[in-house]
Image 1 (cartoon, rainbow, N blue to C red):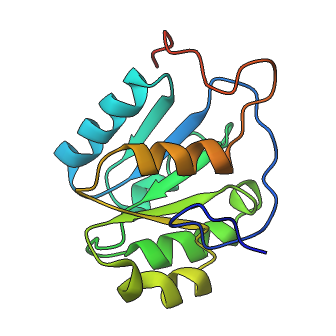
Image 2: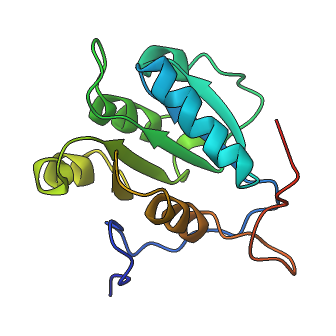
Length: 153
């Protein structure tokens, strides 16, 4: 049974993670990606930004983010292609992926599910729904339900 959490497309279980929660943001809009990273960092998350699909695979191979947030509308390699490619790479196989786009959910849900994207949040909406999705797909282990708000990457 699916969760009542808006935007959640899967009912698969998500592993608990040790804080800080690390979020990889993939978006060709550099300013938008950096703004999202700043907001997430203020909420206590660590962030890494990749400016487009291909650069996402160039991030350090020694680590895997806890969550990937991917824009759908990107030139050269759209978010569906990025998500599908990530699912074929061992280190990303189980990493939660959230589509973060200006498109309506109805316009991306079918292709998103085919690409094994776990959730959806619309750009331009309040940040709280995205934070709730991140907290759901990357539940923090230990006594706190939230990451350390003082942490900066």
